Amino acid sequence: IDELLAAGVEGKRVFVRADLNVPLADGAITDDGRIRAVLPTVEALAGAGAKVVVASHLGRPKGAPDPAFSLLPAAERLGELLGAPVAFAEDTTGPAAQAAVDGLQPGQVAVIENLRFNPGETSKDDTERGEFADRLAALADVYVGDGFGAVHRGHASVLDLPARLPHYAGYLIGAEVEVLQKLTEDVKRPYAVVLGGAKVSDKLGVIDHLLEKADRILIGGGMAYTFLKAQGHEVGKSLLQEDQVPACRDYLDRAKERGVEFVLPVDVLVAPDFPDLKTKAPAHPTTVPADAIPADEEGLDIGPKTQELYAAKLADAATVFWNGPMGVFEHPDYAGGTKAVARALLDSPAFTVVGGGDSAAAVRLLGFDENAFGHISTGGGASLEYLEGKTLPGLAALKD
Ligand code: 3PG
Image (cartoon, rainbow, N blue to C red; front, side, top):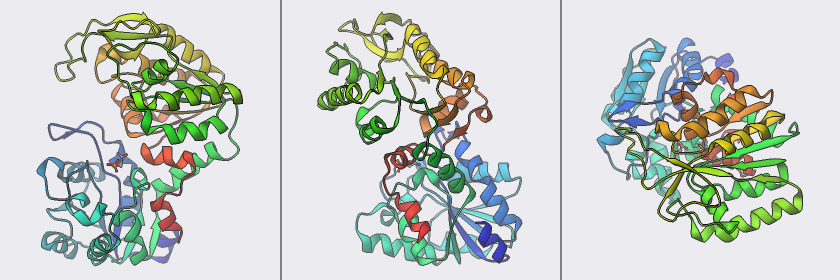
C-alpha cells in the first residue's frame, strides 16, 4: 500500500476488501476489533484523497439479501471510528452501490452491502465468480486486499477481483503476515501452542503441522473431550467427535514419538446442562477429574488444577500461539479457563500470538488489554491455515 500511496491515489476509486465479519447480538456489534484493525488502511487512503469503497462479507447468508446479515451496523461503526460520515449502499453492485461510489468526493468512504448476498461471491464455479468479480471491478480503479480473516477463502472478492485491477496489500495483511512468519520461520523455543474451541476436526491440519514444529501442545475447549476419549476415558454428555477419536489417538502416539509434550486437561468443570448464555443464570458447575466425568454431565471448562498446569507450561515458553477458548467463556461460570490462559500469556515473557476470531474476542470481552499481548490476529481459520503452510488464495492473488 505504501507503493500505491507514493504513486498517488488522489481522486482514484480504491476498493478495500476488508474483513468486517464482526460478532453481533440483536443487531449490535459485541466486538469491533476487526473494524478497528482496518482503520490504518482506510485512513491512509482517505487521507491521501482516494475515494474509498470498503467491502466485506458478514456471516454466512445464503447468496441472497438477508437483513440479519446486513453490513449496516459495521458501516456505522466504521464511520464512528473514522470520525467522518460513511455512505452505505444497500446493494453490492447494483444502482445503490454505483450511486454511492459516484457520489464520493476525494477523501470520502462508502461501504457496500454484504458481498455474500450475491451467489457469485462464494461460488465454486469460476465463471459465476468471475462475472461477479467483473461487476465489482467496475466500481473501482485499484484493489487493496486487507481482509486478513478471509484470505483463506477462494472467493470472488478475494481471489478473482485482484486479478482484474492493479492490486496491493493493506497494512493489516502486511502486519499479520509479518507476525505469522515469526512462527513458521526460525521460531524461538520453547514454542508452546494452546488450542481450544469446539471441534477437533477444524484443527486437524494445524495439529499435524505443529507436531513437527512445536515443543508443547496444550488442549482445552470442546475438542479436549475427543482427546480424552482417545486416551480411553468416558466423557459423559461432553462434546465428542467420535469419528475423530482414531485421529486423536494417532496424534497422541506421534507426539510421544517426536518428544512433543501433548498436555490434556486433568480436571474439568461439569454440569448436567449447557448454560443459558442469554440470562447467564448461575450454572452451579462441579469440578471433577478429567478421567471421571459422570455419564449424565457435560464438561464446559477446564478445571483449576488444569489452569495451574497450563500456566506452568506457558511460564517459561519463548513463543506462544493460542487459538480457541478453553470453555464456554461467554458464561461467567465457565470463563475461568480462558481467563487463566490469557493471564498466563500476559505473565509470560514469551512472544505471544492470539489467533482467531473467538479467542481474540474472548480476550477483549473478558476485559484484558489487547495491547498487552504480542499480537492478536484478526484471522481464525486464516491464521491456522497459514501455520499449516497452505497457500492462501487471498495472499497468492496479491503477490501476482
Ligand atoms: C472468519 O470469521 O474467520 C472470517 O471472517 C471468515 O469467515 P467464514 O469462515 O465465514 O469464511
